[in-house]
Image 1 (cartoon, rainbow, N blue to C red):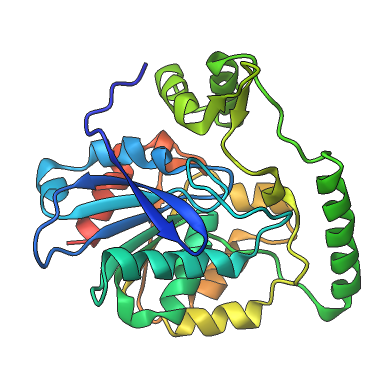
Image 2: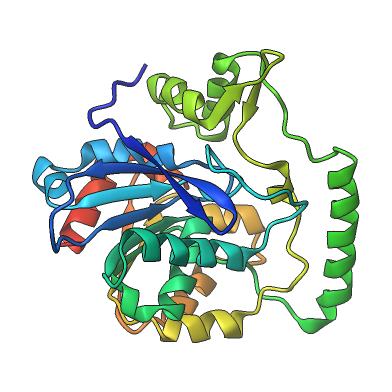
Length: 304
């Protein structure tokens, strides 16, 4: 199994009705800029471990580094709900920063869904962010108002399915089954990393079956349409320098089958006032697993 170089410490933070789990690495120093890491959909804070291990000693020793399990993921609790709302992630992040780093600017990194969260947050609270890194946080395909009735109906149907248990996540007989699932999703993930991640991505229940640490309600679609104009307005208000990092594999086009492309995402990024772009070679969407050293190097150079 993968051997962790820098074990994290767990913090438990009461936050907006949730008992939030936060992993902490690094060394806090007075005046040091904290680095906050936001994971993606159906992921957990432990997903950042390989990248944290790849950071240099000097980088880790000069600042605190934290990663939260979003509500309904990992070890963070969530109020009973049958669907999740994107603005809650921004509100949770805002409350977390107010509690841990009041009146202090931070460096903020988000992956996938977390990348979308941090971009929206930086547009809402530009004064709180010193530097921002977006790892494959592409947003969604553009919509038109005529899609609204169908989208709302789909949400209602998915809520029915959620109540019926149709969205329940597949259990696994053991940790090895979870690791195999992770490796099936990411062909680059090595066995030792998959075995380690499985211990944090899932837990055994009373029946001995291993279950993913992600609330099935996350699978329910948002009833409201994604509006590109609102996203661009947020991007334009980002005051911090932004580094947008992509994997060499074009996951976006693969997911959307051409209905939303990397070229469209790059066009949206033109609204960001101060932007740099970088590509990580030999990596897919989970680039923090595939190339943690290359990613750590990019972040260290940008966050100096």
